[in-house]
Image 1 (tube, rainbow, N blue to C red):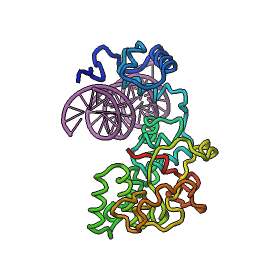
Image 2: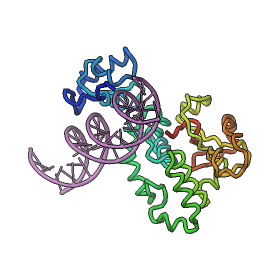
Image 3: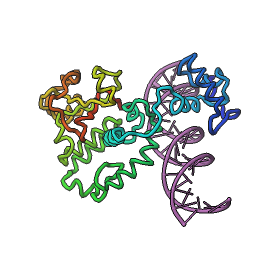
Image 4: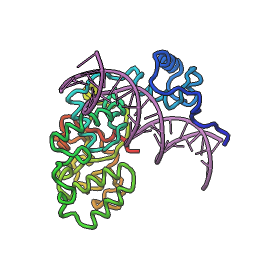
Length: 265
DNA sequence: AACCAGTCCAACCGCAAAGAC
DNA sequence: CGTCTTTGCGGTTGGACTGGT
């Protein structure tokens, strides 16, 4: 194709950034904006690869970064988001303004993992450490397993879907949240400004009070698993349909999650 | 003061998705 | 439509820092 490789590995600096390099990068991005990372280093006069510049900017130099310790609320929000999304650090970071995926990932690995272990919770499954997966699901039948595997092989959304489907079989989360819609999309800052300002994501229920099958509850209305027969009829009905009562899904009643504003890639 | 172990975090690496050609 | 580049993400690493002995 004639394009040059993305990184000219020779003749590039590695390791810690100097103050001068930071200044160059900041002033270039201030003048020209973000993007075009490949050509940026040359244009900015930096002996770095574009990847390195992007990382430095996103994780350290961005002006909107919130430095300093995580608050207790942020801790709990990260735990809850992680229980839903797994190691989707960028998605989690998207719900914590001023925090980066790298920062949250580091914080998770150094603090929260230990915190959960001390609580007797498995950080990867968010279930009690002394309960094995098998013994926890004694009634899980073969059909369920094959269904979960099928979904697991799909994208992240389906993976969450499969996890929650397992939970549904156990009567866990879904029992408490029958109308949960896991349609995960990134949205611009939305109407609830006060809530946004407090970094409080909003969990919307999906069916506006209608009784949905599990597949529709998860925003998979077109799934063959749909058994309620309202295909295609609810996907647009999430805004403003936040249940007045609000499900306390994973304890998110007060710091609830807006699934419309999360996107599984 | 010197050493060591544990912790923290910035940065790197490899991979995959998205987009360009 | 297939190939290649670019970008973004998650996992991992290594050096700096800190506290204990």
